[in-house]
Length: 115
Length: 115
View 1: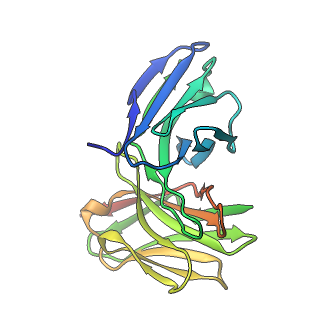
View 2 (view 1 turned 120 degrees about the vertical axis):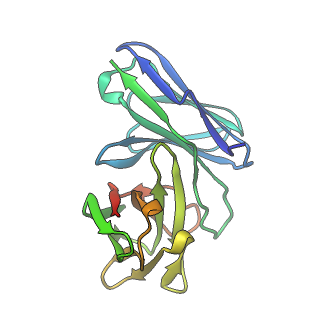
């Protein structure tokens, strides 16, 4: 079984709809992240969470919100989807150890299309 | 603040030829540097990382990268390309030090391998 799972894998929705993307992990990591990937732009950080009570905005948080329901679950919501939020969304997790450099582990992605 | 520039959005090589993917970074503090690979319809997978110590870093699948501080570069190489290397490659940087967490990604380089 995959360590980081995302649901749904593909979603088509209409402008103005509320959408939730879910991420679950079995790695036992405290830190979780949401990125979006656009062709030719690489990955950009939307939100990140160091633990259940610690949530922070990333580079491009406008139009998004998140919820950290448990250590293992981190959801991304689009309150009112718009076409320029059409993208590939990735969840990632990492451990944290003082003085260490911790690899981020990525889920398989959710392809979201907003019509 | 950090930034990453990947030179060439598309690179084509013949099977068996040298692979060279270029990455230059900007960082106000000593950086940690990463190369990730993304195969079609998959998430990102860590190829290798540089933190401290040896500047030549070896990764998975025969890839290696050399950290050159004077050139602010972290180019990825592989002596002999295989068809299975066809993928998109991302260079990423984060700041060294306790609490480092935010990866800044380059825009990616898509590698094609010609039989």
